[in-house]
Length: 424
Image: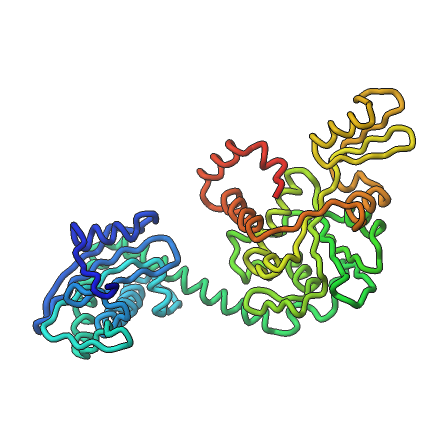
């Protein structure tokens, strides 16, 4: 059965640690120590990686203790104390105090104790209850971990730096949540740039998020004021990947967007407060347009995921070509479609009396054309964004804008063509 999972890992604790950290970037070599006190044998392995998860496995007499117990709480208490004390003594920690969650971020650890008369409690009877074990494990970890840090100052610095980063992030997230909870953070008044619509019934309302003021201008002229709102936003909003929530919330573009949509963000998200039924991202069909689209989708995916999963987010598909022959005007939304339109009209490029326009951006269309091709519900092309699309945008975003330069270079080489016309 599950709880009888014996701890017989070939090569012992070291290879078990290597296994837990197999896909991660580790910060130092494994810290391994064993000791015995009052007939309790304690064996411990610790190795940090640069992820954010904690992975701790605890055993008593080779049986996995799923619910932990006194040996685990002894380990955790010692870890928090030692890292705080060592950090202060070595001046690596300035003012920040580390709590348990901070010191366990990115931690892989194995705690194995052996004793004669284990008492088990808890629902699955896999929680060690012998109270004396807590103190024993705590003092052994204290002594050996301190010794390791003392003898390996560079590793010690890495470990504490990681915990400090976690503490800062925790502070920043708390701060961000507080900012969001302050009722006046997302202004009660709607942003000045928003051209709202008059319709009262949310089910009928839609908002176009348009990149750039010039395109925003023609979209404002083109729209149906009754049910279509326009929110122009500036190109490079902010890199959501590298910035933590509190930074993102300081960006005017994002605050404007969040206020306009009305649903709140992160933990405060509430779909009932939506001000529009459809949110339509309208950007140019070039690299910058793809960039802004990817960025917005990543933002929705991370902080307003329910908007996407409940089918409220769309992408406008502006045409790439206009072909005019006599009185007939046809639009094409892809190169294939363009070829077909030429065939249908029985014309080719350069024919007399045939006007062909290749649109490089939304700004090149006059309001009538924009309405006809991209905004009129009867004739426009729009694509609903699925959760898979948004997750993919998130992935592309992480690769294209993340810290890791190598995967980015590879990705751009392999997908140079697609990246240019990111059909999310």
